[in-house]
Image (cartoon, rainbow over all chains, first blue to last red; front, side):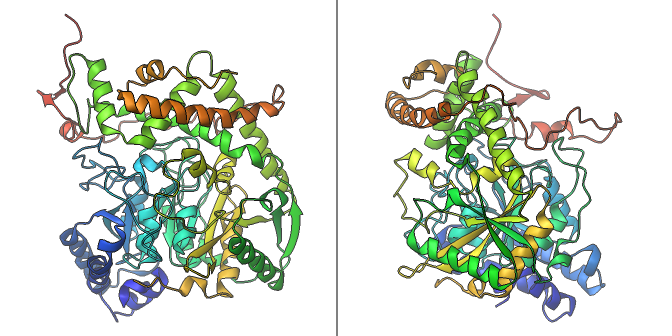
Length: 487
Length: 95
């Protein structure tokens, strides 16, 4: 089944003309027809457009147009509903954007198209990427392909579920506090959050601008490397994009990590972790030792303050970013007697509960009299958290942690307790605060019910080559990523 | 630092966000809970710490000042809920 292939497997077959892009695309669409009623990873997909793109790719393939200049020629890639794709709907999992259709392509989408990818489908997400379970979407809940009574993680839950269920070959997500890595862990795929500034965010609807990054969700580490080489790089349209050369990340995947130093943060070893998650991560650590890496205990002393810091900074930035949804220039509108009433009514009707909660919190921590006590203090603690990581990276090449304290939880289990939901991000949010890179990859399963467990590796700023090299060495020696959910 | 009591109506007004009485009640309780949790940042001594606004500090990022193609007028207006004569329509602001 072509929909089950990785990017590298599919590209090889396309290049040999063993299969066509149309067949591959059709195979993904057939899988969506077969399983998406159960998991609801997609908000929408335009089959005719996807197949037309596939036919265009086949034409180029027949003319020998593949290889180096177009590394993704004919490869279906689905996109989280937070990224602009020209002439496709864009809703951010929210009602407030109404019938919005993107007038332009995000830079990452432009780059994927230039690399030959077929860009199809709108993947479900927590509204405006706010959530850890994909329960906060105006378009319904996405279910975990391994157990449809459970959440897929979030906010890129649709992206992770679609990749895990073989509805697409790869997907794009966005990660503000773990929104790529945590759903990747809970669904059993690979999710990469690049370093802040590594990937242009032009055309990404902003949630928290000092934390957001776009990244790939894929079936293996090599595919994540291939995707990053395509989407990474400087873009003058994003002033936070860093001018750095883009390496061929896949070229460093040698499997050799002898002598590399991996840090185990002692603050991540205590409390809250499920026993099966703990033993899977412990086994992964042993595997790294067997591969010749040196394991070192390190300390990230301000770990315990990360969740509080994050929820002040992220909500403050969100309250400012989401001010643009006012019913004037785009999206849904509820009329009022004057503009202020129009704004209030439009936003009251258009935003869901979690978004309202964060706008109120963010507005409060920025309001007169509270700014210093909350926002400024959080920015200072952010410095301490970032310094913890920079200090640790003086002695280690990467840091090993679980991605999430537990495997996928039940739908509804945490939805009435926002603080508990926030605390489930404990291992992923420091990475965004520090602006470093991180990847989650499969490292085992719980016994009953069988649910994927994710291993997180955190790397230095712009240390993606080393990070992916380490991830690949582990993956090559294991078979977790080859398992498929029983759908 | 502030008490965990928030004047929800006032904050909602600042945010231009209409809330129902039920939402005000529920959000007020939840936010009190969350603010209680973030009080833990007071445990740290930060008076001599510089704040971090961005993890990759870059300043004065500019690009070449040259004319480039931009979104056509009609494409920029295409998603507007109300428009006429190439303009966004809003309720009357000045009498």
